[in-house]
Length: 81
Image 1 (cartoon, helix red, strand yellow):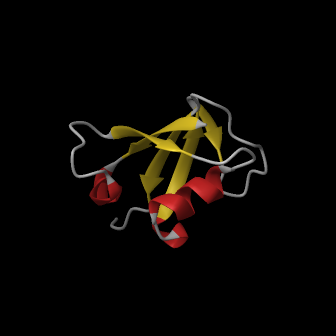
Image 2 (cartoon, one colour; image 1 turned 90 degrees about the vertical axis):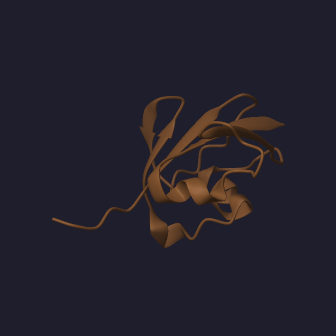
C-alpha cells in the first residue's frame, strides 16, 4: 500500500536523496497509522508538531488506519519567539 508524505522545514532532511520536491511516496503495511509512518521514515517523534491527513488536521496519536494514496503532511516543532 502506498501513501504520500509531505515534509517541511527541518524535516526535509528525511526526504529521499533523489527527491526533487518535499513530497514522496512510501510503501506501508495495511493497518499502519501516522505514528507508524513517522517511525518508518526515521523522524524522532518529539521533533514533530503538526500533522495533516489529506489536508485535514490529524495527530500522531490518531488510531485511524491509513489508506492507499493518503497524503500525510508533517511539520516540525518550531523554536523561537
